[in-house]
Length: 126
Image (cartoon, rainbow, N blue to C red; front, side, top):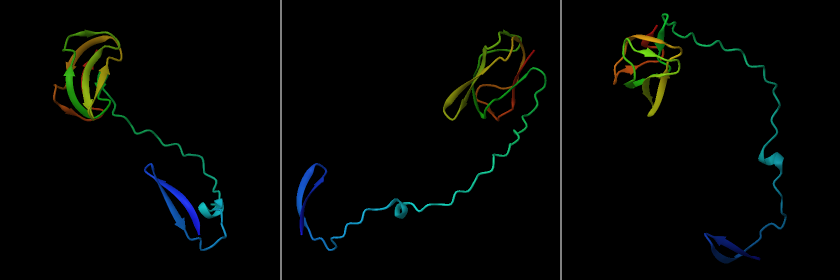
């Protein structure tokens, strides 16, 4: 018999334990995790990128599927490179769409509240 003190949730308990087998065996790494054969990995194959929808010259495509929250420009408006054109809501996060170059907005193809798919034409910039 062995006397031990066990603490559970901060409370100490004195217990008596009957030892049935005095032989103490430390767990070996081999028993816990058997050695697995090493299999060499082949280099990753090059995965071709999915073809993006081709845009007509000046078309600004939707970068991610979502819902149009607001549109910051109107047809006929001049914009600078990097200006915010519109805001999308995708999975409860706002994503801004910026002008890739300076130009004039010739057409707006969406309205606030519209659901848009990835690669859909949002507006045309000339």
